[in-house]
Length: 102
Length: 323
Image (cartoon, rainbow over all chains, first blue to last red; front, side, top):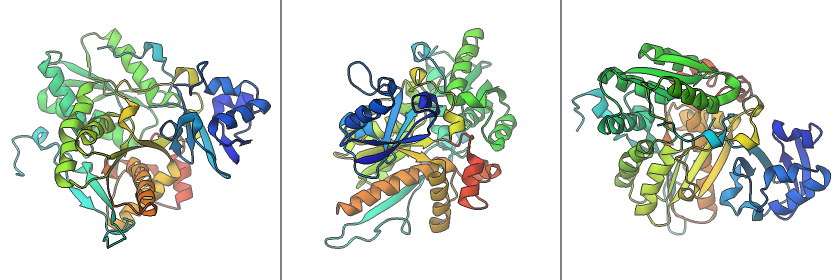
């Protein structure tokens, strides 16, 4: 399945600055494998060592968060738009120091 | 009952109104079940937003546990509405208030906060609300006498919706099948969502979150993201990311078709509600989809959201925090 993948600014070092790149895969896991073959290093920024999606990465297929559609097993169809974004409630806060102060 | 002893007592019990023109199928028939949209008008709260609920509950909880007493100063990171709600309650109860707010929020929000007597500390636009949170935490450490209510992690925020928003929806519309709200602090979805899931078997709880332009995401580091402490993804059944363009488009649809003049985040929520309703229609399922109108459009007039072409308006909104 041929899809378009939108890359956030912070990860464009892996795509030679490209804002979006083409990719292929029957599901998201296969798509990330395919991307890794051309953009080495990208996959490990998205998926943790235990094989799950990184906590602070959100991936959307056609605007829907994949964590609610099967995560890396989410199936893809031709023409789907895949968007990768950093998790936000709003910026640049270190989660290790994010405990409420009161 | 429409008489109250004070403005704070008038928080909640907002109207739920049907949207016969925007609903995919308002009148059902045999073999063609109704798929209806309902808007809960949270702009009818005293300061004009849903945040009055959380602000009132967080202040009450802090008073009950002794952290807040007359003369205290409240500190809060806010993109605007929570600050305005807290400032109103602080005025009624005699507290001081300091709000930490990203500098790229609308002029109206600043003016309202100043009018209510809040002191505003600006955080850099590039850091978004996450940096406002970080700055507020730093200020709290430097000023231990200030009381940070911290809406992102304060259980009273979600509890306000568990006790208020959720039960109100169920009382007004026992046939509710879907609940759609915005995801910011996550308090609304966690509280009302949890209540509705306990009471309505099979209900879908859907989050709509803003997808900003690159100016907002540009500096964010994926290894240092932020997820509010209140957030529990097991409460949700799906989550949509909505672009500024789609949020604006739906905000305009809402006023054109149904006469409801809402803020931009409500447009994002409506976008997710319509996608949800469309799925139910295609699946041949009866649906009563309730979504929240978080606030009115008044505070966003200066952003240009309501004038000119959609494309122009979306471009003007680029780089601004609208939810």
